[in-house]
Length: 202
Image (cartoon, rainbow, N blue to C red):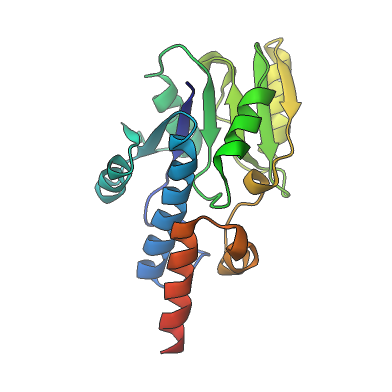
């Protein structure tokens, strides 16, 4: 059974998602909840966060938690991997609310026995990784990170494969993104977006 590591930057992230802090909080937690729902069906989700509210929320959904040491997404993932027991590992961003269990199973199946599988976003960043061991990971997130992950695997003598999984490729940065993906989003995200839209009309 794989461990599914989900780094969550907290309730203050995603500043482009909405001008309202309350709306950003609701949408961020809803997206995280939908990612966890997919992960629970496949393995053991472990959310990395330094936010107490988020930690309590994900534990209610059946996820484990790890403390975020700060300094960004890469160190957060590395901290969670430091607690990892032997077994397959998936690393999935918290802003891919369209993901379903079969998407994670596809990523897991594509992960080489000695190497990495990655799902690249349209902008060249990395939305999800499958890694054969913690040592295959390096904190390389940021612009054009997919190319850096592939190069890192090559330097280690590991195989690197790029996997096309549309529900993992589609990440959310803005409200326009959410509205475009709405019909494919998980139920928590859909409900949160409907509530936000209804509130805007009042």
